[in-house]
Length: 300
Image (cartoon, rainbow, N blue to C red; front, side, top):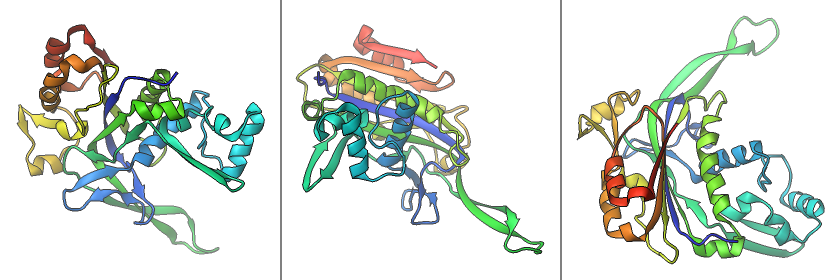
């Protein structure tokens, strides 16, 4: 049964000495807004993190990262489940949650997924560094000089990702509350499991889900733009942002979200918060005071 309650999602994670999301058209440099000096992460990167974890969990995933054509993947599913294309695609959790555009034998269809993420941005100005080193091999036999390699990394960055789940689109794709719960779980655990050479150093810090009452059609919106990094209760200066290398002595403030939620409090069914144990979080007490048992916190 499709889900009936709109959700908003805020995910905060940090990256240290790694490349959060390389741009293949720009020498794989970390994506960056040159005007604001904010590191950026595409929604496609976030969805890949989630899909990879779903695959580890043994779930059926349409975009399974294997080298194959779209028609061959659809054929696989049809033969596996012995049903027609649309029903076969509906067996895949990423299709139900993120949607799909597919074509087969002259026919095509498109489902808009109920859960959409916008591009993630860092909560502060950050730096990108070029690191150079030597390769393992020479360019030709008998040579002494090995090849050189260049790579780009971010010394430290705290990224915010915002998503919203539209209950009306779920009527088309069949996404359920259980699918959304599996998505949140995969976002957290999948970030922990980003253990590749370019991605090791990713740490989930906060996952906040606002689940609204059935029938509610509004939103707070852009939760990632309503959080702030503070030091001793004050915003970080430009130099402090650029030189940030850990969250020691830093507070993450949700107070702006609290203020925006106050007029919507009666429309909130539940707010779930998962936080990393060492994270200094501001606004948690205010959410508990406002929502009571409708605010749940878990530390990991």
